[in-house]
Length: 161
Image (cartoon, rainbow, N blue to C red):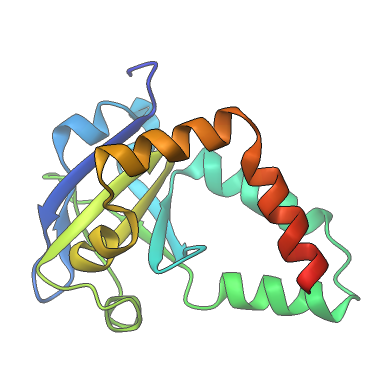
């Protein structure tokens, strides 16, 4: 397993929802975390494929919340809706549930983004619409983040709420 548990891949998905996970992605996961995933709604316009370890951490977090609070109940129920356990075949192919395919407009071309045990699965064109930027815009964003300017934006948006 690579120490860098991050990566980006553009791949094709079959109309039936069958997806072959790239070998280079699988090598970044622990050997016991390469064959099965939990699929859930993502926090954005994507679905998430969670390794067993990452999913257990998320469930520990969910279980630590007070279920008597309506907001917490809404969050838990929304997150857990359509959650499925997916086992890969011998060629490391998984089948994404049809409901998730339709809800997130997953078509032939998709983007896989590995972030610390969680794989985001995006419609390719939506991903690029959201995240493509010029080198100059990336440079400015990098500067803003390193100088803490994003905190000021958060404070302003909190004041407007």
